[in-house]
Structures are given as C-alpha cells and as structure tokens.
Amino acid sequence: MRRVALPEIGTFEAWRDEARALLGAGVRPEDLLWQRGQGAEDLFATDLPMVAGGPVTVPRGFVELARLAVCHSDPERFARLYALLWSLRDDRRLLEDRGDPRVAKLTRMAKDVSRDRHKMTAFVRFRELEVPGANRRRFAAWFEPTHHIVELTAPFFVKRFGDMDWAIFTPDLSAHFEGGALRFAPGAPRPELPQDATEELWRTYFRNIFNPARLKPKAMQAEMPKKYWHNMPETQLIPELIATAEARARQMAEAAPTLAPVRAGKISARLRVPTTEVTEEVGDLHAALLACRRCALWQDATQPVPGEGPPDAPLMIVGEQPGDREDLEGRPFVGPAGQLFDSIAQRAGLDRRRAYVTNAVKHFKFTPRGKRRLHQAPNSGEIQQCRWWLDLERSRVKPKLIFALGATAVESLTGDRRALMARRGGLERTEDGTPVLVTLHPSYLLRVPAAERAAAEALFEADLRLAVRELAALAEQPDH
Image (cartoon, rainbow, N blue to C red; front, top):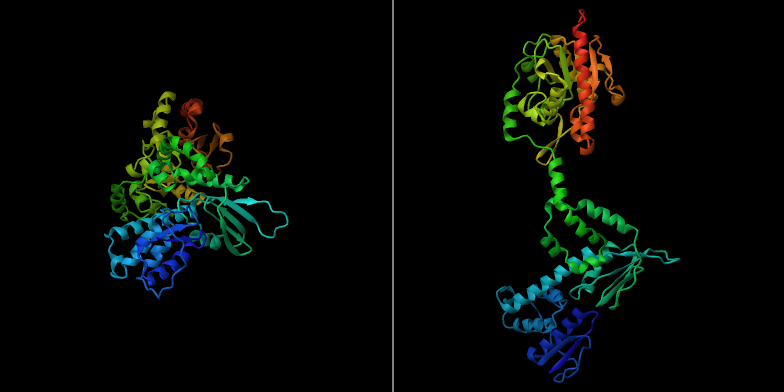
C-alpha cells in the first residue's frame, strides 16, 4: 500500500497534485493510504516515489467541493475524495447525483467546513498589542476551529484588516499578516493576550442590540456554540440577559404605543368629507372642526375632538390634546389620564359634569412605532393655529374660571409655557381677563415612579380643591 503524506500547510494544493498524478498513473483508491503530516507509522504502508501521470479533467464543481472537503477534520476525507475522483472517470455526471452516498457525504463535509469558516469570521476577537516603535498597529487573536480552515479563511481577514498587522493563533495553524504579506506557521498553544479597551464598547453594543422579545436560547446556542464563548467578551452578558429577558420584554410591551384599529380608517374617511366652511360664525363646532386644515395634524388623526359640557359651564378645564383613545372615540378626557382626573376630581369635590372639558389642540399628534402610536407634544405653531378654536369655545361658554392642565394648555391661554412648576397653583389671566388656574396635566401622574405616586396625586388633588374654592369665590362676585 502506498502512503501519501500531505503537508499541514498547502494541504489542498498538495492533495490535488498527488491525486492528479496517481489518477493518471492508474493507482487504485484501495492501494493508497492518505494522511496529513507525518502522523503515526502504518505497518502496511510504504513510502514510494511520486508517480507520473497524464492530464486529468474533472467536472465543474469537483474542485470547489474538494477544496472545502479537504479542510474537514475527518481523517478519511482524502481517501473519499480520491475514490470519488476515480469513479468520475467512468461517470462524468456522478457529481450531479445528490442521492449517491459518496457525493452526499462529501457535500455534508463541505457544508460543515463552510459553517466553521462563517463562525471564524464572526467570532474571532482581536486584542491590540503594545509594540514600541512599530509603524503599524498590531493585533492578535486566539481561535479554536473545528476543522482545518485557517488557510481557507485567512484571506477574509486580509481583506478586512489590511491596514494593520495581526496574527490568529489556533491549535492547528497560525496565520500571520505583517507588512502586507500573509504567511502560515504551525499551530501554537493559547497565548497570553492583553485586555482591550474596546471590549467594554463591544459589550455595550451587544447589550443594546439584544432583543429580549425574540430570545430563543437553543437557536442562539446553535448559532453561537458555547465552545466559542470563552474568547468573546460579550458572552459574559448572556446569562444575565437571558435571566432578565422576560421582564424586559414585558416592560417593552407595556411602554409601546398602540396603533389605531382598522375601524379608525373608516371613521377618518367618513369624517374628512368637507362639510362646513370655517368662519367666525360657525354654528356646529364639531362639523366645522371636520373641515379644519389650519395645520397638518388633521392628516394623521382619526378625527378632531371638540370640547363637551354645559354651554354655560362656570368652569372650563383645558388639557393638551386628544390621546390615543380620545382620537378613536371623538370625546375628550376618556383615556387613562382622563379617568385618573375624574377619580381625583371626585375626591376633591369637583363635579366634571358641571364643567366644560376641552383641549388646547383638537387633533391627536403621534409617531407610529410598530403597531402602536406614540404621543408627541404639539409644537408652538400647532398650538397657535388651534388657539382659534379654543378662543371660539371660550367666547361661547364664557367660563368664570379656566383650569389649565399642563404646559400646552398654559401656553395656549397665556402665551407663555415657561417655568410651569413655579407657576403651579397660581392664578393668571387670559388676554380678555378670564382667570386661569395653572396646574400639571394628569398624564404626569401616570409617569411618576410608584413610590412617589401617592404624594403627586395629593398635590394634584390640592390643586383641584383650590379650583373649587376659587370658583365658589368668583360665583359670589356679581360682576362675574
């Protein structure tokens, strides 16, 4: 039996040359013993001089298959490839038969090698070395591939990191790129590599791209096997990210805004049919609002939301703008913030049914985010455009007191939204002299931490009680 010893560097080229010569000389597969490196001595093997053969042609695809399969760790890979090559002499279309066990086995081996190459390009982590006097930065990395892929994969790193010197050490081979030249050396034990300052940045990036809502531990470990984890700084975060994934996914779902249901589109299409010209003498406020094009907010909102309440209400409550639920129902203060307002107002002795409730801006302003709608505060231009409608409501209702909730309402009524906290609880006036009591919007109460919620609600209740007292005092004045 002839023994063919292939070198550990340049293995594919050596196998190709040997196989071509042996096939040309008619040496049968069963008469050959292939090995990479010197390996152990075989009692039945004999080192014989290389034979001379004629030219050999192979079907398209065999060379690429052989280039990958030669890198597999299976010790029988050389013999399998030569046996297939021997059979191709009689059946040129054998390579197309994916059901043939010889072709199927080598194809699986080639895929194994391709997957291992992908892992190497994704999981190699370089660390910078301090080299005094060097004119190029130098890096080194340690990697443990499953197959003999260093030669095949090194050109990827040359192309990506051609502006620096680097070395990749593995138990099989080492690749060194210095001064623009690539060379290979025998394998080496794992070197001591310094910590790299960029690893913390990499960990931060990994933490931010980790999506707890899409966590699939088995799929993640299939893509990122644990054997590579000890060389990757970001994998130190994985146990904690898995442990907290469920809670983080729940927080993401609770914080996400909602998208309008399908029925909202039908409502918008019906309501946007122009019905009434907007004039100073509009009779039906709701119908007039449907025709409002004073700013661009009407385009995305489902419908405008006018105020509601007794037409001669002594108290007018002004909020910011319709929210998600108000936009769908067409009524003010029916969402979570409005419900909280009603609850606290009841404790404070304020009967909402006797007040005219409205908003400074009549259309819902939002940003789509997935299947939800994220509230956006109206800008000063939009507030100013919508002030025409609020003034119209005030001129009709003629309230004795206006309760302004939040910065948007305060800006619309007084022209100034600055220092809201300092102005809270103060009594100011509109241009026509109507008293305005300033406070925060109840949606603020929904955002404060749970531990501070009770105290915040108590302060808001105190503002409501102040409004009740101010209203009672104004009612006793004959001029109001």
